[in-house]
Image (cartoon, helix red, strand yellow):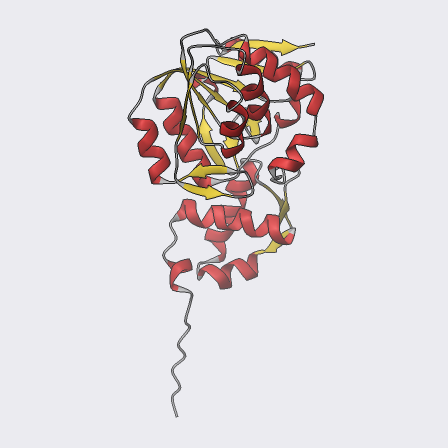
Length: 269
């Protein structure tokens, strides 16, 4: 008697392209702490050669650490925190960074404020301004701006991501594309030599890229803990940044490379 064996794979998994598959591998590694080549072969229905190539690629990018028979999670990738958790991390440092960011803003300008705890601090500082137009995808940012009656507040709308209190999606992207701004002020989950400016949430990265496209200047505000760390999704390269504001604990090699790239570097004391 002849038996036929039919192996059924998850259709969604089988339809993944290389980028999607590698993203899935990183997420699985972060969730489990480690992954084995054998389980990835079974999940994706691919050869050991292809899976090992994926792991080696991700190891070279610093997104995981290659180990015998598989890989382990990389310490370079930060755990994503909620807005409340981020607010309590480096709060005094972020306050100083927010104040420096506001010094880069001029009366009468139209700016975009990204979501995040540092941007919430920037919003609090901006209430002393007049004649500003401020667009944001952050629900908490918009709330902080309500204390001033002297400028126009625009909110992107879109799908609300409760953990970060931010809007994302096609509606948010399209609302931004209808305008042109003097400056965009961004935060980041990670800054790495090779990866550039990164975040953990794919749709946030997409929205941030649109923000950069419609702004004359890109200002990045981040504390030094974000250096040498990588999120999975790229926002932009170093060369696309006009100004970077950070604290005095920035690694020397980063400070030198940033200035060589022609980026204005502002360091809080």
